[in-house]
Structures are given as C-alpha cells and as structure tokens.
Amino acid sequence: MADGQAARLADWPARAYLVVNTASRCGFTEQYAGLEALQQRYREQGLRVIVFPCNQFGAQEPEADAQIQTFCVTRFGVSFPVMAKLDVNGDGAHPLFTALKRAAPGLLGRPIRWNFTKFLIDPERERIRRFAPLTKPERLERHLQRVLAR
Figure 1 (tube, helix red, strand yellow):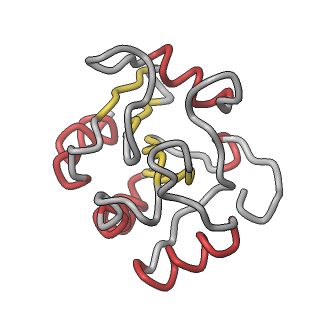
Figure 2 (figure 1 turned 90 degrees about the horizontal axis):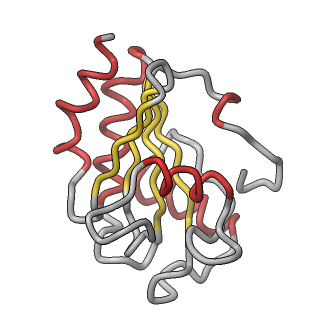
C-alpha cells in the first residue's frame, strides 16, 4: 500500500476488481473521477477499484507515495486504495501485473503501453478482461454489470 504495508487482492474481498495503473501527470488523469464514480455506484454490489501508480510512461508519476495519495484524495475524492508506486513492465514488474498481462494480453502484445490500462477481474470465474487507456471508466459499466450479476 502507499503506507508501506504489503497487501493482496484478497485483503479486499470482492465480486469484481478493477485494477488500474495510474499517473498524476497524464492526459488520462481525469479518469480518476470516473473510477471513483464506478466505485461509489457499485461498491455495495462488490466492486473494488484498486489503483497502482507507475512512473514508467513518460515519467508522469514522479511524486512520492504519500504525495500521490494526497493528490488522489484532494483532487478526486477517491475512496479506493491507492497502492505504492511500482513497475508494470520489465524485469522489475510487480508479480500482479505480470500475471494480469499473461492472462489478458493487449491487442499489441502483453506489455502495458501506457497509464490507465484497466483490468477487470472476475475472481469467481477466474476471468480477466483488459481495457486500453483510451477506454473511459464509464464505458466499462456493462462489462462490470455482467460480472456483478453472477
């Protein structure tokens, strides 16, 4: 977590997870608002949005973890976990993102190409669906509703 504590998805029991690599100085940063809207709308039905800041794309997340957390809460009022900054590609990629990329490769291969790549995880059916950074959170709603309806 951003506070230095280790965490696993299982720490937040859910019927669906939306895992996103993020950055505070990205053209897609405004998507935090859409992610929070989904979290608010579907939290009671079992959605857990979890974001992972990453500085691998254009150095758009240069701040320390505490500053990132403050930015997300102050600017977008996020109520979901903002984890510690990590790498999503390369030799130092976090194991979660290595597994997500293996389970749901993108159109251009496994590597994540930019900030705000989204992974919708259905833990019950062990299915993962990947969405590009250009896909706004509100466009995930029908996919999310299908997972939560099970």
